[in-house]
Length: 330
Image (cartoon, rainbow, N blue to C red; front, side, top):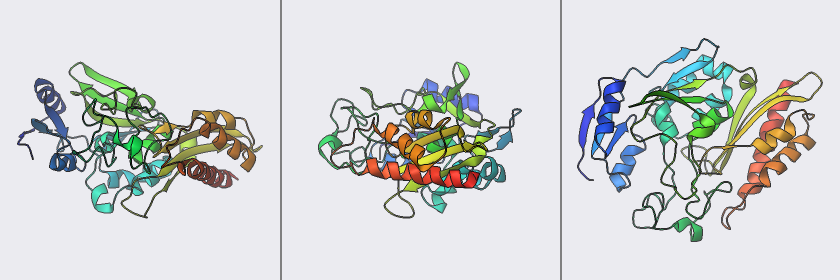
């Protein structure tokens, strides 16, 4: 491991100042992803600024009836919060499907959003990887492809984002609050994570010296009628092959008044299923409409030879989730 300096920030402003002043600095929160990367040589910061003890660990009510989730709120605490379980059940279920109980007790809200891909080539420093070392190539294009993208990939990177929580937050139209040298700004979840394009080493729109302080969940009637389903190789401590977070509001006449769908395990960023949503709005909430919606979304899929199974898997998962929500609305 490369030697590095360590500093504990006394407040948010000091944390931002320390990182801004040192080009090779990084923030340290729960450390569940960063520490692994330090060990294997993927990350080599000159300075770690510890923000784990800043007062960012509260879940607070917002004036509009939504919730503000502090950046340092532990995943286990967020999943167990009664307000989250009642108003945003998809978020609670997504959190509980991630990692293990021990890791959820340590992992934070901000850290979950910022975790990096688990692509085997990204984590193997002996192989070419544009995300880890720009310009070296993407080993997955001719290699192991089971966990890789079917949407939004490029010739430079086919990795996927590993978070479950981020998929649910995208479905719920969350907003990420960040603080940098220029002050506070808000980034909608739909704009927070990036597709790879020609610059796959950048996972988010967050600047290097900006610190996540909170995530805002807006008040929403449809959010209370939401759920999350994850398909994976084993029941615990496994990343999604595909996942679906959805919220569905069905009127008394059986038509869809509102719908939100986001998918995980299929793109470099959590993937909002806009085509499927467009098909469903105003349609009758039945299997025919659900199949049409899933098929519309999957017209944009571009699977690799090693992950073509994800196309029918995502279709079936989307159908399962929509059926569950529709039955609950009756």
